[in-house]
Image 1 (tube, rainbow, N blue to C red):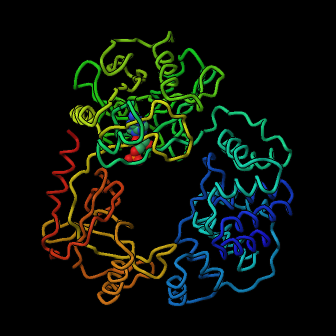
Image 2 (cartoon, rainbow, N blue to C red):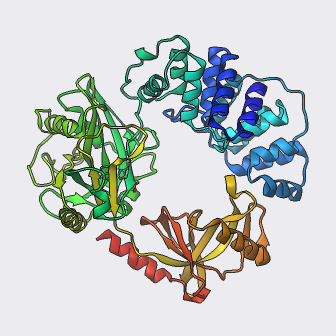
Image 3 (cartoon, rainbow, N blue to C red):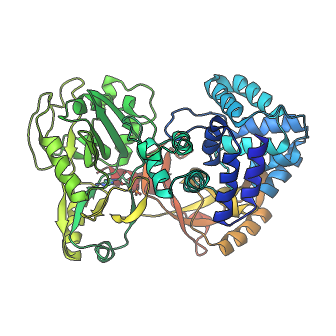
Length: 565
Ligand code: AMP
């Protein structure tokens, strides 16, 4: 682990990508394949490979306390160090004493991470973390903590690790990328590269592939400027889901590549009967049967009640029914389809979803989809619906489709290039999203935190609130949107108007009003207001408004109720 920590330090000290990849390549060549495999995962900034469900579940507070205990520093000294560095790993590197390192290898550290993940409760986890950190040098501790908190920040993303693997072993970058995309695992990719067998990488069912991502378009004109004759679909507001179906087995993965099959017990049955093995891409949405025979999608806030539950009761399944709106197919009947153009994949998908299957009580064929199922039945399979595709060649046509999509209660449109391949994990201009902005809120800043990365030492993370009677109740937290100059000015003001210094956080005088935009509003116990904003971002500082002019909880309720219709 010492060598890896030293390599990380060197990587952090150069901004040149070529130098970074050369350091990683040299490092990998000096290690055994097993240590190399553990290291590539760490170098991509994670304790475990992306597709694994394992999480450490060790919070910042536990790490903070452990570092305090092992270093013998006072709370004040630690806070001062935190302010200088902006991350706990770097703080540990500075304040921990030099101890005799047991010289654990990356493989040993990975083993310890697994023990920590498996331990139940903060006491058990804490003991293991202490044991690990007391056996390593301060530099190793620095990087172990950075990996644990997912805050490696040495300017090395997964794609640079791929480049380093290509550089270290015989193989082109394209081969490494393809193998990693198909396997979804840098360790396996490294092993194939070492063996010179990258070309043998095969897609593995039940290992999620990366999701193709969309770029925002500001207007209908812009959306049509990249390609002609766009394929247009409604933009459904649910959660992205990749379904793997083979030999009657079904597993569903979220955009973070976590398995979410158990959260939607009504989906596997509906998918298991497909005529061929397949990987589908689509959106799981809350589904309303009230709006007519075939039903329609509801906004994310409705689906939210279904999320984050260990077990989904039959009652919940009936109360918040879901549907799977499928818009792409990545693999079918033994063929990987991602390099085929969208129009071809679309045809294959149509056949797959309309072909014979072992349907459970097919009820009707409607405009929204080909198959629906009887919702009255106890755990009837959820509808699996081919997302309808429209064509648009002019901004006027696109505007009409946009209005129609909104009238159906959907978020906006997805505009796709019919000639484009499916590019896993990439955001390009082949898929564009056109959305409506929800109303913005004017909020009051109540607490601030120091930022990360290039925002170290400045107060750039703001917690904000709205009025409930004459009380301010927090509703969210935002990090982005202001310029560096504005943040610098704000930092100065906040430091001069701090009411309470909580170390990580400063409680400030509630005087600054911000206008925040967001994608959606949800009910949430996380904030005092009982609501939370999805993807909040600061639009501007409302210098023209006093705190008392900020929005009230009634306005929040109004927006929330409005988005449900
Ligand atoms: P955003 O989350 O705002 O970046 O928008 C992209 C997301 O929209 C995707 O990741 C999907 O979860 C979702 N989405 C909804 N409908 C579609 C669709 N028809 N095609 C692709 N993505 C969609």
